[in-house]
Image 1 (cartoon, rainbow, N blue to C red):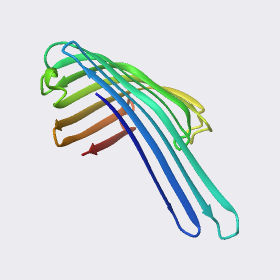
Image 2 (cartoon, one colour):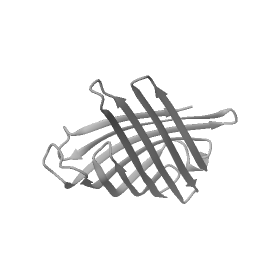
Image 3 (cartoon, rainbow, N blue to C red):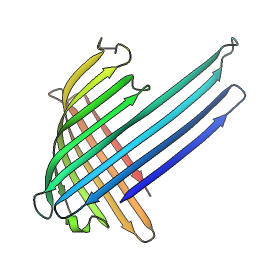
Length: 187
């Protein structure tokens, strides 16, 4: 399957204005032998504020990147392969960030049903590297660390539309107290 989305919004008052433009392109192919997921995105946000002292403050944020997954089938429900991503974000102080490593996945439904429904559990361990725009609060301009993540994704496609969601828990290894949880959904 192939999906393309383009979103935008703008708002303003007498002392402030902001706008946001984002796009997302995804391509997925699932066969009985393998699964490929690729997603690329770009987001541009800008806010402009007129300050009480007459100055104007402009805050541009540019984020873009891609992520991919390739897994080879180990049967009707299990697969193993690689997961990788690359991105750049002014908001996150990143010239670039790259991650890659092995992944294993289990799908409740057989992969032959993947065009209609999936409920996957994906575990991956990745080496992650960052090149920062400015020195971080930890005094770093570059760093490389090991991370792990467990992601659950669900997608149900019917003639009337698609429902999808994902839930991810991730941490650094061995610094498990440095972690994050993310949730996403769409109808």
